[in-house]
Length: 216
Image (cartoon, rainbow, N blue to C red; front, side):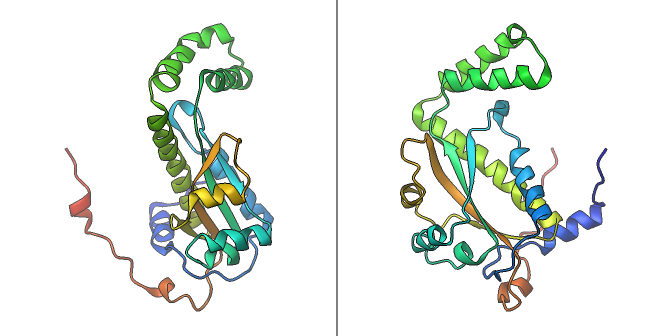
């Protein structure tokens, strides 16, 4: 079993986290970023299909152009790292077959033993969802990965800011995604909060647990 945070340590990390409005320009240590990148690779998804790509934008010129289509939010250019979360536009039978092949390879399972599972995915995803529903389904999977990324960052004392105030179509254009089969959903900046970000000291506003948690 890996080392784990205590309940109080986890609660403190999540309370410390906030949507950072102003980053300084310090870079994350390489080992820290590698762990955050692993949190994306290891994110869970429905059927394990991973209908996503995570595009780490390092080029300063690209980030400056993206900022123009992000309500001019400084996080886009100032944070150590900017991750653009992409969804797969369509999950067809060929993609499911590729996933089944990967399962067989990693787990050493003969493909014939995975055939029933393959057919289940084909029926429920490739054939059972309209193109519009597939795209929405893929977007929901992306948000699972975003949540894991942000929680992992908080656990390591790394600041993040999810960015929905962006123009996905312009992101797709600037990042050259036409014909790639992937589309922008959301972005997230990661790095270190600036010392003068006033929001860092603002009290976290949440409804009482009794209002949002129910036991049935």
